[in-house]
Length: 110
Image (cartoon, rainbow, N blue to C red; front, side, top):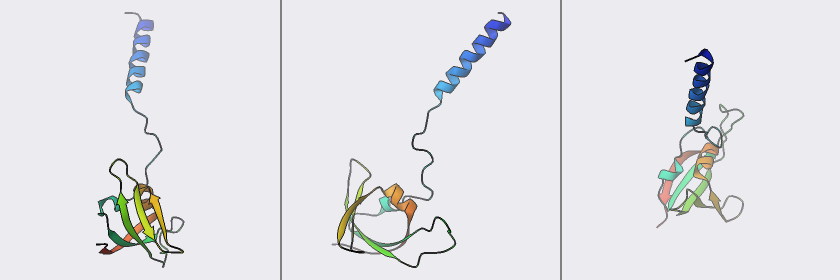
C-alpha cells in the first residue's frame, strides 16, 4: 500500500465516522425539567415566571393554571387560566417549564 492510498483510506474512514454521527436539530433544549407532563389532567397549580435576565430576582406574581386536556399523540397540553380574562391555551410543556417554575399544586378539578 502506498502513502497516497493510505491517506485516501484514512479520509474515507474519517468520512464514514462523520456520517455515523447524527445532527440534533433545534439546538440545546431548555434547562430544567418538564414538571408539567407528570401532572394529571385536572390538576390546578401555581407557577411563577422565571426571570431569565436576573435569576436571583424572583417575580412576586404567581399564576394559576388548570390542566384541561392532555393529548396522547403529541405533547401539547391545554391549560385554562383567568389571569386577564378567561381563556384556554395550548402549550408546549417543555417550553412552558423552561419559562415557568412550579410553585405548588393546589388541587384537582373533579
